Amino acid sequence: MKKILWFILVCTLTISSCVTLLSCSEKDYSNYKNEGGYEEYISDADAGYDDLPYYNCEESMEKSKAALRYYENNSRKCGDYIITDYEDGVCINRYLGFWKWEEISVPETLDGKPVVKIGAYPVDNGERFYGAFSGCNDFTLILPSTVKYIGNRTFLFYSGIVSEDERDDFTLVNSVKVSEDNPYYTAVDGVLYTKDKKALLYDSNLLWINLGKSYTVPDFVEVFEPSNGVADCGVTITIGENVKKINTFIDKGEDGKEPNPCVEPWIVVRGEKGSAAEEWANEQYAKFEEITN
Image 1 (cartoon, helix red, strand yellow):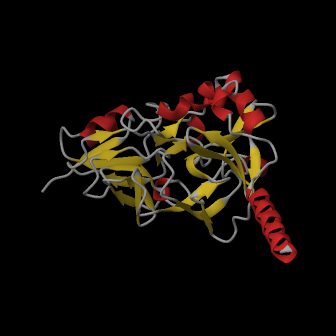
Image 2: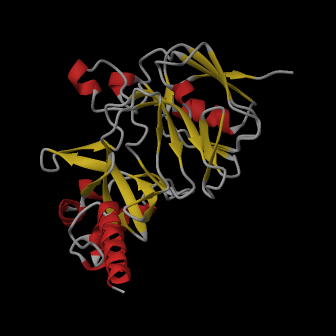
Image 3: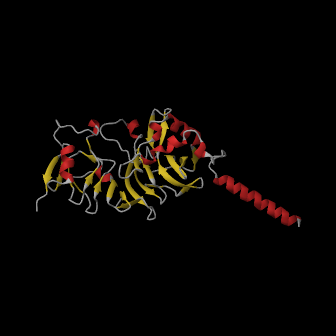
């Protein structure tokens, strides 16, 4: 009888130890929704695109001190990540792992909760904010089925002239893969789209570091809105009549997002007369070239 009781005690202690190891912190975070600043922290859940409010979200901590305090009180290390509680899951704020394996695969769960957001982290007491994968370059980002919210610094890559040190503030995601079970996003040939593929959201081929002499928007795309913009570096971009809406910018590097009408455009936009492509070319002071049959 004593041997049986001893065996049960050992098993109980072993299970208890395993549970402790699975936790990412000794602090109890179960009451996180009642922590100060929580509502402000998750206020960026609908701060993205008008047609896709959970993509390219503006970071709440940049505008709200209460949100920043919540991050400071709630953030903790879990495996290769710094995370915070966000809605009914967690937000990945910072990746601490090794990116030179060419792939970073975001886990489905961390600290026993689904990973629902890719966010950012503060630097210098909130003076600046970096994307979760800042400093990682030339890699494939693999998103699980659980990720819904994607912050506006997730795919932020520099343009223009920056110092070597400043380059570590940015991220170069060369390719994206998405779990087939993700209900919000999909990826085709490394390009990120909405689940129905009607909206193009991110394509590294449009960055100045990858852009060739021509680029054609896929025929199945109806909304062309890459959050990384289109580099103005001597390219011809063809936008078919299938594209009904364009929500992006021509990236002129040091000139920022605002087009300069006094500078000769380095980009040619090809499209149908009277189409969204022509309207966008005019807005961005790009040269428009009509597609003729």
